[in-house]
Image: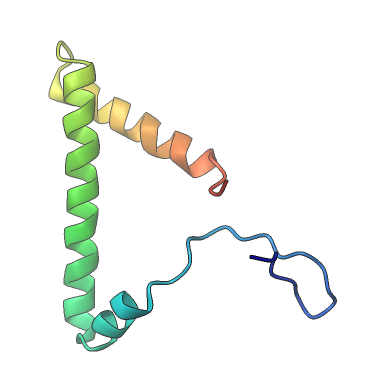
Length: 84
């Protein structure tokens, strides 16, 4: 697969995974409110998975301290450049 290029021929910096056309088609069938519900459900799942892992990694931390670990992890992820 070749590297995507812009109009000038320069390599494009791909920062996101490719779109899943089937998933996009399904989401477009939903009302705006239903799309928000799907997004909130996905957010809750991601948070639950991260918190579960942090609880296993740090079993002695209080929920308050785990909350700080969660914020640290999210901030670290924001600074990580996606891609290969």
